[in-house]
Image (cartoon, rainbow, N blue to C red):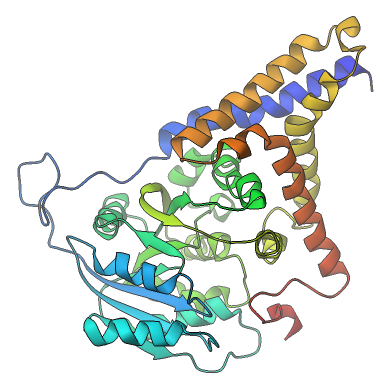
Length: 387
């Protein structure tokens, strides 16, 4: 393959996500801002009744974050709510922190998790058990490392109602600290808007277009029961994909929104947590056997190859420089917009190709572990396939 051909391929692979991002950025929006409880913003007329929401939080060894999570939820405006935390056999101070808050606020309840049955992922089992403790018609599943804005629950409930979807989820602002976090975690929004045909997600109910964020889901009890709840995805480690797919297979629609102003999440706090945390569910996403080839080629050719070609002294001679410069411009214009819109690290933007290489490495590591018969587990538990 000649240099000119490689330059053309790199431009095509860079242009594909850039063009889709341009379209998706208009479709991926935050829920509308609400005014006073019970009144829609700018409408001048009384809105729907205040939503009654069960906030369900699975927690396993979450002493670093559960207190801040609960404080933020309890500060919510415009909703009537209960908060149920399931202590999933934690061996740290998670349960003690929740008990202290429950003693001060009757809206908080702590429930113990039963033993994990064979074939279940711990999180899916915890969420399924939590759903049985919920008392209100709207239920929201929230990871313990998420912190909500005061109007977050009310705005998400309005989004659920207006979208007429069975399940909605919000993508929080991703807080990062360590270098590997800054390099890899911001790619979540870039991949979402650069590779998901969001119009297809909105206009059809095909499971192939299903996507969500496992950090924050909201649904009605009726829709959840129609699907079979988390029992329908009991072995999955990637509920961000598997749960919306289950809803769509049951004939319901799903939707997503930009929750940058509604919630913030610190997913991982070290390089090892980033690596193993993303690897644990990679086989259900990019590292699936049917997808790893596409992702490896499209990401390497579109996000890494242009920078390599730029270093080749023969590029100008063969006439490939304009294509390579155009590809690099597309890469960094899109990443700059992602970083600004979603309040991400400038360092991650600058070192974007390195982050992409690391992401690809995590996917292939997950494949290696699966082929070796040792799928990546999480929080002291083995992969459900090994139980």
